[in-house]
Length: 272
Image (cartoon, rainbow, N blue to C red):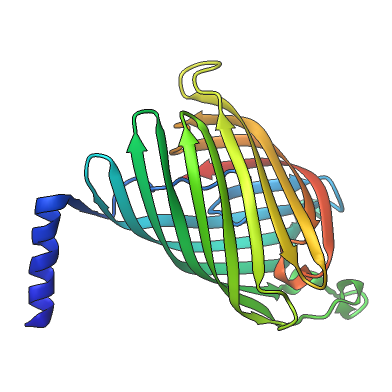
């Protein structure tokens, strides 16, 4: 009885004050372009040690509650980030793999040619070595690096402001559980992305993006990610991107969380 009453009130409110869409086709807030921890479906070919990354992930909105200018959404995140090594005969053994899953909430206000709002995520990440990290010839783990437990659960809040096709954001991540437990629990974010719409042709847009994170493992450390390329498709929507990425910071993969990483890479990504 109570459940039925709540359902009636919910849909009555939707009729009076806004509209509810279940499983809408687009995300309320598109991924922040240079931020590593975003849904991607593609490859990143790094310039060191014949390494490449395969990302298979997606975020989708389950519900939009909106009126003419405001949209509130609830969604889910399911990502896999895989570190591969290139070997002869077109072999790509899997060295390390990281899994993320969680839920997200977003709120956006649109006024003329600008918008603002925030995205909040509650997520879990776990990291693992795979068989490609094992050296069969030496019968030992590569570089003497044995598998270890790494996982974290966190809350992330990312406010943003967008004017035309320029978007600026900042944010805070609080890790409420982590193994190993000496990893600090606060992280700070800032960044932007800019798309030059219709510069070459309709739906072909050059872009540049930068992401900064201030993290702590044993000491404070700045992490930089810069991306520049061309997107074919909607600027803040579906399409395919070809881009260059430079990264300098803590290693993204959890099994290497206390090591530094610096690389340049060429990427291709399907923006869903």
